[in-house]
Length: 460
Image 1 (cartoon, rainbow, N blue to C red):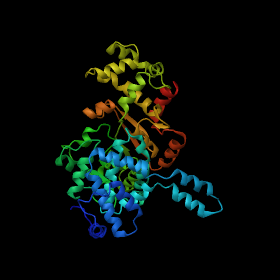
Image 2 (image 1 turned 120 degrees about the vertical axis):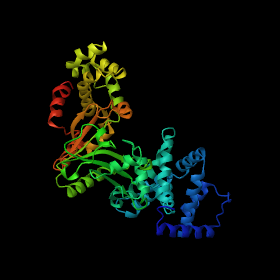
Image 3 (image 1 turned 60 degrees about the horizontal axis):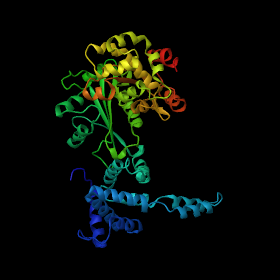
Image 4 (image 1 turned 180 degrees about the vertical axis):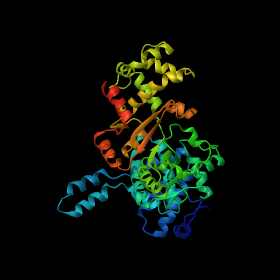
C-alpha cells in the first residue's frame, strides 16, 4: 500500500491482535456502530482501543449514504454533553477551588470528542476522519443539527493540523508521482490538462510549494503555484500556457502567486494559507535575491454574483441611484450601446448580450464597479469576496484591477473575466494587516486610492 509507514504497519499488527482479544468477527452483528463507539469510549486497553477504532472506521466506510446520515445524527443526539451534569458542575464551580474548574471542563466536553480522539488511533485514522468530515459537511445544509458534530471534529482537526506539525515542501518534476497526480486532481483555480501542462508549471521559471502533515505524507494540504516574471502579470493565459517559452528565473524581478488551492474539503475552515504565503515569500527571497516584488494574480470568485446584487439594488447601502452616480461619466457610451439610460441596467444588459464591440465600452465601468465591489460590498464584517478577505487580512495591498484577465469560460462565469493583483510588501504587511482586521481599512495602490476616494468614497 503506497504511503504506509513502518509505524502504520505496527499499528495494523496491534489492531489485528486487539481484534483477536475482542473476538471481533466480520460477520458479528450484535453490536451496532453506535454500540462499538460506546465500547471504544469505555475501553482502556491500548490494543483493544486500536482494534475498535479500526473496526468502527471500516464499518462506517461500508455504510450506504442514508446509514451514514443516521450515524451522524446519533453522534449529535447521543454523544453530546449532559446538560444536567454541566449545570451541577457550573453551580459547584468556585474560583478558589481549581478542582471545580477541572470538573467543569471535563463535563462540558462532549463524549464524541473523546470518541474522535480514540478513532484517530486507528491506522490511517487521521485520513479517515478528514474524509468523514467531508461527508459531514455535505449534510450540514439540510441538517443543521449536525453543526455540533462538525464543531467538535473541526476543533480537533485544527489542533492536529496546527502550524507546528506542518512542513513546507517544494514540489517539482522529481517529486513522487502520487504527489504530482494529486496536484493535478486538486488544482481547482486553473485546472491542469495533463502531464505536459503540469511539466510546464513545474519548469525552471515556475515554483510550487505545499504544506504536508506527517499523518498524510503524500497529501498536499494546501499548495501555491508561482511564476517568476519580469514585471507584474495582468492576465492569466501566459502564466498557464503549456507552450510558453521558459525564461531564466535569475532575471526575474517579480514572483507572481497565481494559484492557491486548499486540497482537502474535510479541512475546510482550517486556515493554512497565511502561514504558507509567509514562508514561501521567505524561501523565494532567499533563493532568488533579485526578486523585488511579490504579487498575486487572483480571481474574484463572487464578482459576477456581487455585480448582479449591486446593479439590481439588493445592497441596502448602495441603491442603484448611487451606483449610477459612480458610473455617471460612462452613461452616454453605455446608453448608446445598450439603449438603457441607467448605467447599472446598461452594464447588466451588455454583459448578458456581450459582443466584441462592447468589450472596450465595458472595460472602464467594469473596473470601477469591481473596485466598488471590493471596497464596499461586505459579508458580515469583512469583504464579500473570500479571496480579497484572505489576502487583505494577510497584509496585502490591493494593487491593480485587470479587466479581461481570465477569458476562459470559468473566468467569464465567476467574474466576467476580471482578476486582481494583490501585492505583498514585506515592510508593510504587518501594518496593513492590523489596519484591515482592526478598522476594516483596505491598503490600496495610489492609483486605486485616488479612484476610490474620488468616485466611491465621495458618493458614500
